[in-house]
Length: 497
Image (cartoon, rainbow, N blue to C red; front, side):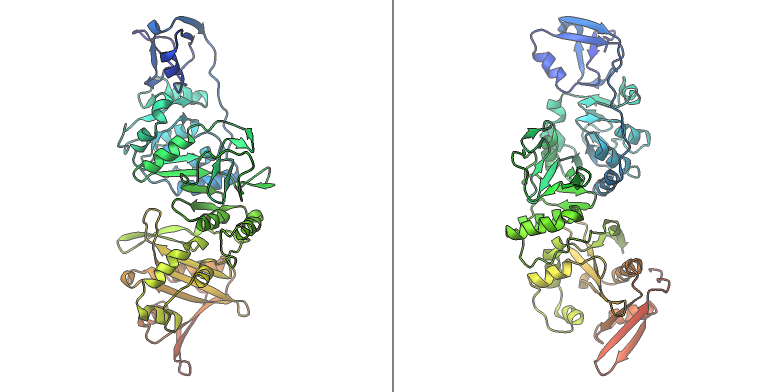
């Protein structure tokens, strides 16, 4: 930009590598453009440091935005569920980044520390969503190294004390990034293999782009207190002809984010959390967010390579119903309620082994001391139609512990489903079982199921009393020594208390 009254020019929309280069160059030639916005931060150079200058008056390149497509919008909605109020964000450019930003309109007090500042961020600033008020480091500031977008964006950053541009050596320093609590870095990829290796810069051996700041921000966010490194990409490319979740990276493809650095991978089919997981757990999680057309191929590959058990009961044709995920307050605590996934096998086993013997007996009508791999995996690998299960999870970062499970199994001959609910002994009398029954009921009605039934032992008095309060028919069967409970789903569901 032209010099101010003190003789300082601004590097304008691109401080990134220009400022350090000018500081090291033996001879500096500057284009002084009257239309260049004057940005603040570490973005100035004094006229005494310029050896030659060319004055111009020409428009700054503008990057037009396209409205995100349906797939990108679904990705954005999934990513938005990972972003907490008060988090600090890093995003790039393109449809996925714009879709993420457009999905954050209900968030509060987000901050920005990023390499690139785009129009999508400006929308959230104007909506009062991005304030930087909760940033512990450089509060209130939008920090970036370059700006690319519309003239509206360039007008916003011009002489705006809310925006600070710094060299990339600062914005992309992982230790600077890590100083921001709840740093959420959102980056894209070309393909991800079933072990979690991320290729983001090449199509096979053909280099498509540079690695950019992906590794810097992925590692910086991982070191941040409460940080979340996220890779977001569509599940397919070439109009659905090829999968981006692949058995192995293409020959010659470069690994940008290693399987040791990867945390979250998001597609339009959901979220896979990979950090600290085994190869089997990673493969199952990534298959769950791959496009259904390619899941059988991926499953065949991992079985052949012995990444998973040969009897792994994965249903490759049913997609995880992500909209069923929600948080619910039971008493004074807020917990996650979501459908079970194949990757919940270990958690379900831990849930089983946490029970008292009488709880196990009331659930299985027998003395049962173990829950092996095959049975646990079958209990987790529901098809989300004839067999459905919800878990209630303690909202612990990355390690959600199961504290309750509700499930149904459809009897196709009667179009009625058997229902069962188990709540950990220490978490009872909080309305958890009622909520699970309500969720199962609503979901089953959507599948066209007409009724529920269950069998309950006389010793299971809390469950019997709950069903009576809900108005269900409780019928004693003296020959079998059990109570039979049945009710129609056509009735209006009871109001939860």
